[in-house]
Image (cartoon, rainbow over all chains, first blue to last red):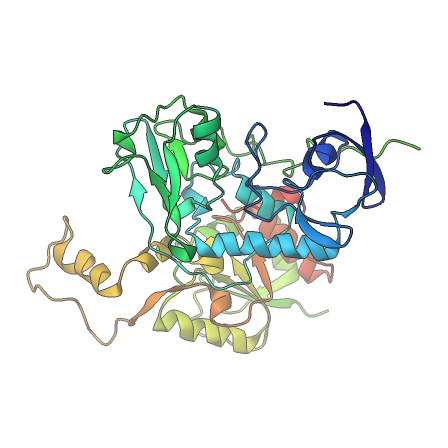
Length: 238
Length: 181
């Protein structure tokens, strides 16, 4: 990899990327937060959720898959893109059954945190209330598909970080869901409580049993600070 | 200046949001300087008496009575607020939305493990409001002007929103006060 710096701008701010970096990675290193959901550090980007959509030279692109290129003009924090992201998050809420009030992940859930960041008090789309299955067959882990947003982070983490292939997608469109590598359920797979795939879940869809509600309300990850505020830094004086 | 009129009701809710309103503690003395209550569980009025400035709706619509009450509130309230997760997304009662209504009745009155029902029938007295096919959030039934999420919204959230509205300021709540749990 060369040391050549790739200069481009995000919302007018000068960014320098290293060769091979995506827009999202370069932005993050420079202290600019691009909202994301299916992206996770250390995993192959999927470009699936479209929350990180930015405009690159006027064209919508997912920042997590778009390689940085010299001179590109990127729009990130514009009213148009904020609205698009709000709509994507809205749809994820109404397509599933997200009962935050009793969810163990509440307060540390990335979907919920994005809704907070975007100031969503109520979704504007009608709720679908789909019937989804729960898999508690594993002694230490459960899958609650009511909370699954099909980001595929568990699919990739199991393969790329755990060296297994516990999870994958089956079905199409509204019937798409996460399946496991066994006929009966998660309990018959080689999935272990120590698998990184469990931590990869941004929502409460994949959780360890008997550890819920360990952190008190008020001290959870997103109780006080919006998601992304650990990344954001003001632009350096020029 | 005349005091503002506030009406509140709990539709398919647990009264937890009303408890949270009482949780403003001694600020309730300030509140009573600012408002008079119209229909509310606090004074036990069963009907709305007149024009209302602010209506607070707890709970979603699970039966025909909930819909009628919500429509009555909409007719009389200048500003109508969904208070809490049940009003906003159906909440815990909406967990039945994934199950056909007939199965819900069967579980509740006929086949559930704790059911004692010698008649073997589902109650169908005309005094009992008919259940809707599913639980609807308030804004899917009438237009709602504001949403205060939370289960329940904290006393500080309710206080901040109410005092902003009563003093003519924008309802612009800080990050810590808008939570879904």
